[in-house]
Amino acid sequence: MRLLPAETSVSLRVAEVVAALSQALDLGSGATRWHSVRTCILGMRIAAELGLAGEVQADMYYALLLKDAGCSSNASSIYHALVSDDIAAKRDVKKTDSTKLGWETLQYALTHVAPGKPFLERVRAILRVAAMRKRQARAVTALRCEQGATMARIMGLTEGTAEGIGGLDEHWNGEGNPNGIRGRKIPISSRVMLLSQTLDVFYTSAGAEQALEVINIRSGRWFDPDAVRAARSLAKRADLWTGLETHDPLSLALALEPGERMMSEGDVSLDAVCRAFARIVDAKSPFTYNHSNGVANAAVAIAQQLDLAPARVLFVRYAALLHDLGKMAVSNAILEKPGKPDETEWKVLLQHPAHTWNILRCIGGFEELAEIAASHHEKLNGTGYHRGLTAAQLPMEARVLAVADIFDALSASRPYRDALPVERVLNIMRKDAPHALDGDCLEALERSGIGCDQSFTDLQALQTMLAKTSQGLQPTPQTAEAVASRYAAGVYE
Ligand SMILES: [Fe+2]
Ligand SMILES: [Fe+2]
Image (cartoon, rainbow, N blue to C red; front, side):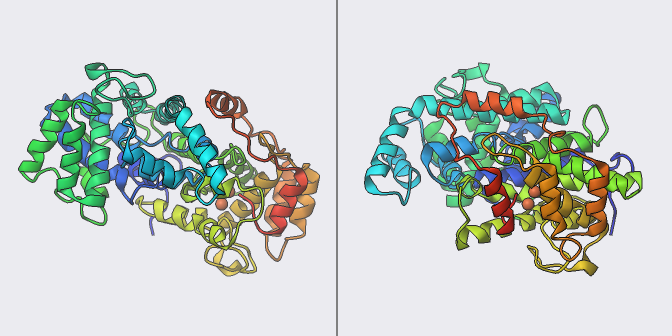
């Protein structure tokens, strides 16, 4: 088993890390596995056919992989606006010609607006969504585009990459969002990205012929006609779809990167990429805002108190930042539910560490990190999830993470949620040690004196985001008592 490089990450390839992590974006968008990676393959082939310059292609490569980096920022708004599963709504919107009023949009509304609610409530919700359709679409797209571009900048990627992501939803005819830019004023990478993602969505769900028909119909309206011609000519030579059927298209995408960018080259570092993905996960719900960052701070404080070697402290930090990647697969209808999840919802929640493992194991050298990150809900007495591991199977780093995760979940204040005082949190946690939680880790946490609010750096960013939504975001507030009773019932994020 290879271990994560000790001090820095110089031997890690940026494309491999970003492409593997893009699976979290696929989960959050309701896309099929490897959608972002296949979109990257299609986009790079189209870019080559168009004869785009090398540096444009280099920027575009990462924009294609990270096109959905903003998908979590509007998940909560979409859930509240539609009163529905945000992930399913996002999955189907990519298949809908949402700019034209007609059967497709009506069918979309009937499927995704307040499903399962009483008739009158549904009708009211559909009318409200219809009345606010344009304004709301612009607002949620603006959130998504801004967040996506910001994530690229945090990772240290180029401005060209950030701008490409920011323009993903602009349409050739100027009727796209959020800025209604027209024609060649839209960055070329955004134009190729929109075309490529549509090709992949229809290719995987309905086949090559249907995918080509859709881009033909929307050519000159959604899509740059030159890019459509390039895709069609590639398809005619059978060069467009080659290899997309493989179960693991990662190596195909890696081979298409212009150059081989390594971590710590320029501004891209492993820490920056982990921080960005932590923010993507945390932006999903106002109840978990800044959680991954908070867990990372608590985990580092514990690891230092335990005198772990500096390389292991860093290792714990990365595992903590990425531990909840799999939560991207959990709908906000579950994450923001005021009461206890039902049986079906529990099953979805219980699987999120498995998703985390599945994503991280795809990065060469992350095998151990994947195991530790995916063990954050395990308990020493075997009562945790998702594998029910026991003490002998849980190394110190996993124990650190489990304690840090609960500490942040209970102690951090969030918009719409009270915090429990630290002493109360520690009292609750002491009852679970040493049979379920590691006693040494808990003592180390107490010794560290870490407070519940030290990691709370992004509140203002969240409030700015919320203020921009057209629909007020009003989850039911959670009291400190509710937080404590959710933990007692085994529910914490
Ligand atoms: Fe979790
Ligand atoms: Fe967590």
